Length: 251
Ligand SMILES: [Zn+2]
Image (tube, rainbow, N blue to C red; front, side, top):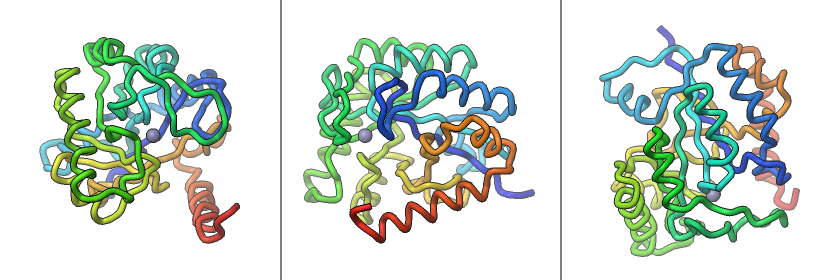
């Protein structure tokens, strides 16, 4: 039997805010409908952990839904759609910014509000999972080991304390990680998901899970093609273009 494929989808804002980190509500609704139509099961990172531990079997293809930054539009716009389909989701929270607005988006757009603890507690009660996205949303690769541990441990403890949920999952801000960040994150979390563009399999290092940036799939046909297995060359092409951009700074 071939190794199960897990698409860990990465979202930020579900809004008409524009920019690469916003996906229009109608596009998001269509992407979720496509998953339902394709009958691809939506699982959680806890299911992935169980599969790694050998206590659960995964279907040949599945999807995990993740949302970075805990923006208010998750509660207002994304969650009702997810609830309609019965899809589970995981939200990565930068704990120092809860109830405030983001201050790290450099695209020049509107500064988007972040959910309050009350809102997140309500969502946790309805089955939404929460992970850590550090305390301050800093580039963790620039920090001393000691400060890094504060970012990792304080965010975990605060989410657990406020939401009454065990926090096992982490996403480094901007996807920036290195050997030190991965090693330290492994002391506090069971998984870390970055921005490396790929489909996940059970052979992945759990502290370096790839994700699918959904901005690449705002064209409905392309997303449906990916789900039915005919979109592999598009993903490879996006990955190649990303590599080229990284080699040619300034593009
Ligand atoms: Zn972020």
